[in-house]
Length: 439
Image 1: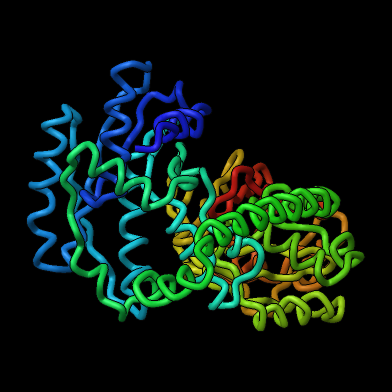
Image 2: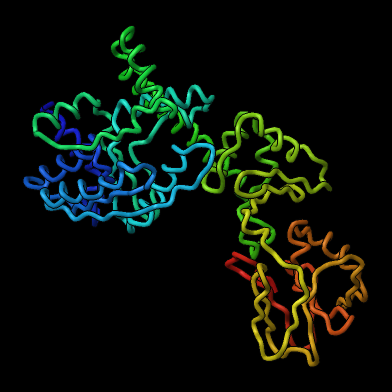
């Protein structure tokens, strides 16, 4: 056993020693078995948070049905509570990715606020990740490999063995006579990572014995470079994070002019940083959509379709609309008293402030050609009023219009640019996902 292995682990876990719980992702394999044993051993001499193990059962192969029993026996022997979670792996092009996604969804559900999920990836895994992503043409963020820690739900995901080799873990396991599961799928070279591990790395290390350590070190250098790029992105985004003229519209948005003044590379860097929390990022070829949106004429309303939503441009501002925001029904809605507020399908809610007008009312959406009486201005074309307000085009079709029969009575006021009143009442709209309403 390397005498520094327990010390390395404690040092890497120092920032999370005060967490309310440590969860160990326990597959029963070599890596997680060593991690669990190390933590239980350290807990005898050092004050650690309560330990809990979680085993995710994917059900992808018959052999896996026996693994929960093995994991339970190990945890009983070490006196660590175990939770077995059964997940459904969605079919798709990459079984590896689907299984990983299912596993991390389970981790997210288990990890409470301020708690830590510990996984057993090691230095060899990091080297494989770097080479795998390099072959797929990843950028700096991807080539930075797996981070030591990252947010997970309201807690943290931590990989405390990333600076430990597989050989060190095997030596520890053998010296302590640990029992672990050998996953038969690990020798199936149809899976890309298995191909790298079983075919490519033996050849690399035969010629370059330090290949694994060198690749892992390269990942560290690239992680540092990515940190600098993130700092630059934060500076550039602060300049673009100007107040929206529609504070009631609680959607992420940026001012376009500060971004346009940057080089193309800095624009992409800033947008990648901003979009990371919103959507899966586009590949290099797909960035043409950003340039088309950025360079469109001022009166155009271009959009850039991404994996989990759309980036819209309205005037000199870009807005993010998640995919869920498009779930909207423009079917007319009858408004019967005293139903106040009125829930609009996929479009927030509408309510009267003050006395509502008498008679049957209905909420409709724009068809074109609408005319409304504006106090002090007479009859005005709704389209022109909307143009004056600068309301983003993607919201105009969502704007609820209050009708009595065929007469358009009221429209929610847009940022105070004009006043629409229904006598003794005011129409107030709180769009979907908004924290503030529009009245």
